Amino acid sequence: MTPAFQVFIAPARAYPQLWRVVLGLALIAGVYVGWMGLMGLGLWLATGGDGLEGRMAALAAGATPWSLILLLATFPGMGFGVWAAARLLHGRGWRSLFGRPALVLRDFVLGVAVMAVLGGGLGLALLPFAPAMEPATPSAVWLAFLPLALVGIAVQTGAEELVFRGYLQQQLAARFASQLAWMVVPSLLFGLAHYAPEEMGAHAWMVVAATGFFGLIAADLTARTGALGLAWGLHFANNVLAILVVSSMAGLDGLALFRLSEDAVSGTGLGGLILADMVLMGLVWGACVLWLRRR
Image (cartoon, rainbow, N blue to C red; front, top):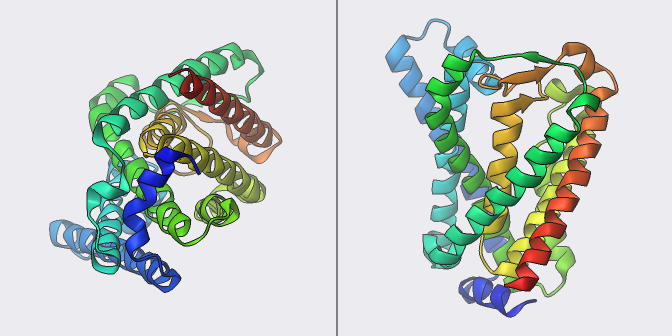
């Protein structure tokens, strides 16, 4: 463990028992489900009970601008769940999950910049070889929803980083010395949380592998920096590209400028895109490590 990571996990050492972590994850899930229940109740009160089931299904798909915004609005519940678990089961506050605020902000900006330069630059360079795409959202609609979408993605990615690289990685590192526990386990769970066979079909396990690979990269960078900022910045920029620029999923395309054509999704094009994304993330990780060694 790096000295920075030792400082990062220090607040978790007071109550490192594994049963607390298991109970904490259950509490996080419960608060998240409860938050979504409150949102469902709000929709019912606002629009009436008729067709509520259909509206909730549309919300889960994120296939229209407002449904995507509402889907992203479910993630504060995940963040509240992490806060409750840390406070009630481990006796520590919200800030201990992030790391030093100045470092979080600086590294968040770094993560966004690296992903924008490498991801955006390589994406443009490889555009002639990309699978067939089609326009998805009119530019006027996209621009109108962009501020809300950016805030929503920041909250969504921040909540996921709090769960997997904040709470879970911290607590497991406080309990176990082995990286298999505090890097691999959270990354496996992060990948499995993105298993979506209805949307991704035959590529569902490739998505799990790619997401788990990103989880390993994020866990390593969190251990190197002792804060969530760099992992959060990469996660945020990656999701902006995947949700707001080019969507490769049947859902979550309610505000994408482009989406992969149906033939590309059902054929081999999506698999190649997932593999290319994994290569890109490896390059991004290497660039971040080189930068960290220089500062």
